[in-house]
Length: 222
Image (cartoon, rainbow, N blue to C red; front, side, top):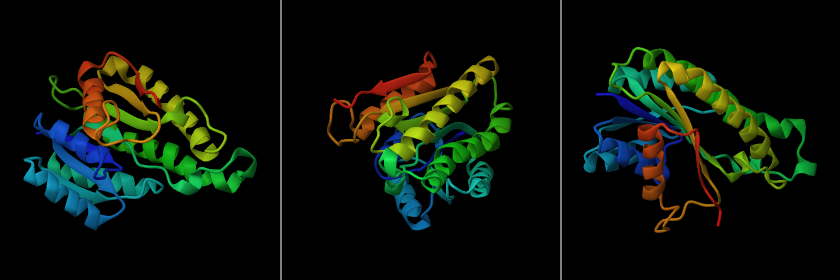
């Protein structure tokens, strides 16, 4: 059995993605900062027939990300799919003229250092998966990843860097059969919405992984 690792797993989109991939036989490594919340989410998923376990890491600490993903591989099996989708902190979102160099440190650690650490940890294992595997590296971002917002400067700048990294990875890994894709979600995730319900978004994420025919999918804010 192979594993889906969700960095930034929570009860909304993360849980929906876990259930969607769990239906396909994936075990799920849930990664975030709070062990208690991870354990509660893993217990809920287990009730739905999804094998899941939580691993603590801080995305601003590359060593903790590497350690969590290594432990997940040892516990659940090889990581076939990595999803990087932590929710940015509110203090990253300052108006452009109020943003100082110090204000950009957190967003850059969060959106650039974290993904790079995660990719470096899982990539060697993905290269040794069986021929019938579909290794994927998936990113989920807000709308400022494609259209900067002057009131959310930190995420706008850091997401731009992450977007460049995603595009470089997509081109570099294509010949190895490792897919890299991104889902952009404009605005809030809304339970019950036709386009922004967590289950609907999880289906779009699974489609990126399974169809592998485009770099980016986008859900508009309207």
